[in-house]
Image 1 (cartoon, rainbow, N blue to C red):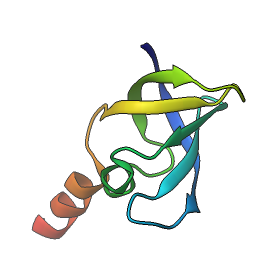
Image 2: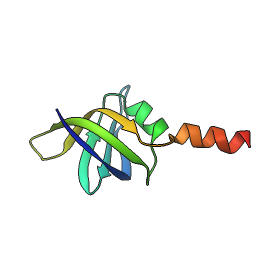
Image 3: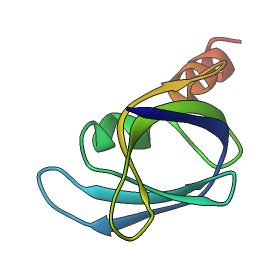
Image 4: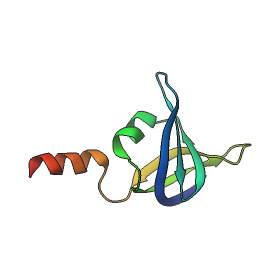
Length: 84
């Protein structure tokens, strides 16, 4: 399994289903996430820094199996904004 880290941009939902397929760019590298995609949408927004582990598919897209947000998640930021 390979790993990438960087800044997330261009988050788009490609397929609406029980397990949505989400596309995003990580330092201009095309990435896809289906596993944990709902958590990803709740945790990450454009401009956030993440570390991701996964494999490349035949189209040279990085398919994310695991990810971690470096710093505060979107939910943490929202909670802190409300709590203050």
